[in-house]
Length: 491
Image (cartoon, rainbow, N blue to C red; front, side, top):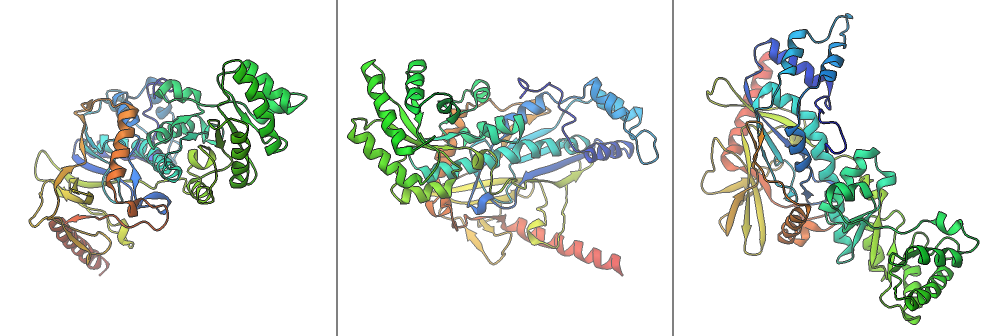
């Protein structure tokens, strides 16, 4: 992150985080201990899961979190509705001295996750926790969304490589870099984004565009020129004028390359009926003695189009996916939220906090939450959201947050483990830096343990996630108490 941006990113936040921080300080509540949870309510793309991503950028952000003098000068110049200073000098001085002391527990990147379960738990002074809300959501939401999209696209492609080609359509520089990282984490084999390749160690791929072909007198001349210039990187884009005639011209140049000791790596199709054209192109290549030359396809692909093309017998071996991956075209936001779970004063008892809503799915879960994953011999059985201060009651069972009649006992679990692990303690990083290869392997292993019916692209089976039974009962009691208080207030 800091290879691209200046170290001080503390103003990467919404104004109301700073106004609340100012309020906590003025009311003497800045050091009150709080616990917040970051989670999403439903998996994106009408799918059955999400892939956790963005933790490493979060840890880099937290390690560099501080207010620069230029930040304080800017805040000092803001005014309220009366034209007077919005923030008093005392608050700005506190920001000047500000150093994080929070604890953060997090689900490791690449873990398959589900709705309602925390991806991050932040504990510390409420003023500090509040200031972190917006940047944490910004960093986790987008990368989790893109990693999930990439995972779905790669699942549709099967064993075929998927290349991320979204730089030119991504939302700005950081949108492109974050998308490239998350797409590789989610299963893509390479990216066209050279800066992402440098920063993150992702393999980079690419050859030439239509403009290269059009800049020559003929298509044949353009292919020959490219072969002369880049003999070890020849994937010819064959659809500038006529696709199958372009394949024949590529074959001719391929023979010349072979005579010089090089091979034509592939051809790329970027328009037209990709199923028909790939089958016809494959026949031409095979008949000409180029069975190893791969067919690459691009042109607004996504998981559904890829699945459909494969069902038609398309002879495509490599998939270049751009716009619909890097922008998460069909669902451009994850919808992650950051909610207060508990408060306490001076090391006393924790007081669970509950947010009510007319929509059941938006009623929050009180307490200091952890997620325990249960596995059987054949794969994942279910995830339990529990309060660490309450523990887990016997028999161990989960109750669906949306349908309390759905209850699942977990007697048959061969093993269980908690997903949230220490990442920051007292403001200092304790989690080791992981390579993207390690994270990619975790994603692969997690998905391999998730039943295929929960991985399917359309109408997936719902994986079992719920509240620990005693937490479910306690939450219902709090809901009833809060509603009774509201009725009394209205009277």
